[in-house]
Image 1 (cartoon, rainbow, N blue to C red):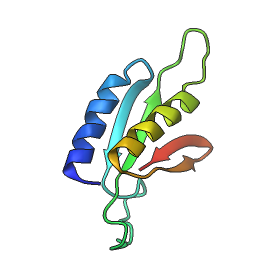
Image 2: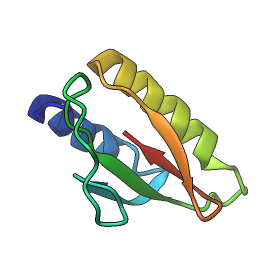
Image 3: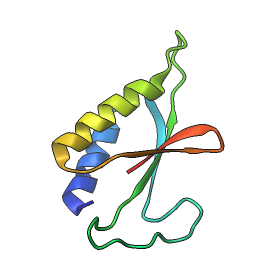
Image 4: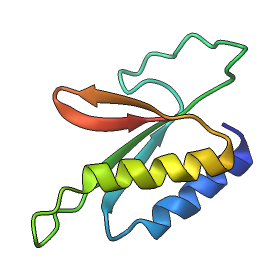
Length: 92
């Protein structure tokens, strides 16, 4: 992910306030261990989000995943979904 893509991601996250309560961006794995760097893919980041609870009980995860996929497709980044102890997380 380039600096320009990261800056765009931060702007995009700010636009998602109706869905996202808080967000964290990590340069390495959440476990604290660095990933093996694959020169063909370049460096990556992990994005963790805490979703807001909708007053009508709407599940925001699918909406956020859809919006994030659109953003990444437009900006040339890739998306890999993973889970953390049964709690869905998005990893970029």
